[in-house]
Length: 252
Image (cartoon, rainbow, N blue to C red; front, side, top):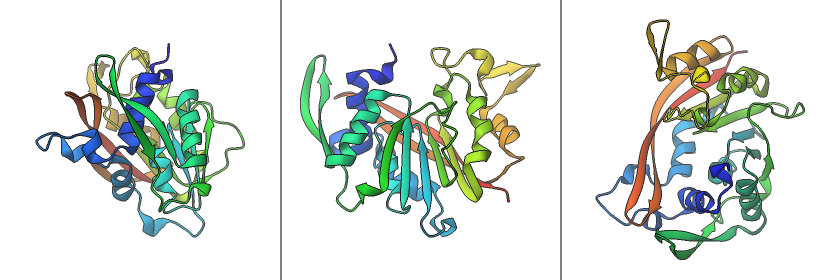
């Protein structure tokens, strides 16, 4: 079963995207640099000065929608697409009602009821969600001023298939943000399709180098940023990771 269709991962990601810092990490000595992820991500990675009036954005691999909603602060129209039907159902409920109840895992089967909330300062009418495959987007998806792929690349079966489509959906002068901790696993991607983490033709292949080769014809690399994030497994176990975020501008 796809782990992203499970109730456990849904709860984990609702907390990751919408939990207050003290809900997610109550320990002051913990990995606090990974908190406030959606707002911090958009602030760090999207250059507002490059956005036209009535900007359109695409959050590809949006999960439960935290980044999608944050993009609505600076863009008039935002589409969030994810392969998980359960995640999209939750995101749509948040778009309609602004809140969603879920159970945060404490230990074992013990849980605590929590509520995910979209900030009142965000215009939820700017956001729509749909189920879709990043490797096979619908033909009428149109173009966007901002496209974000956060922590998606190393979960695709054929990541290069996705990368080849990006030049067609980012407007000239538009921004593309790709971030990932590059956790390549054969559970998600056959090793022959990994963009890094392997030796090929006697060389140690790095994901960043593969991205540059794949995108440099259509995009200019503007910035490279470390984006830490913290995910809570349960009350005493957390994941702290640092995504490598590359910010690109579509060539005219």
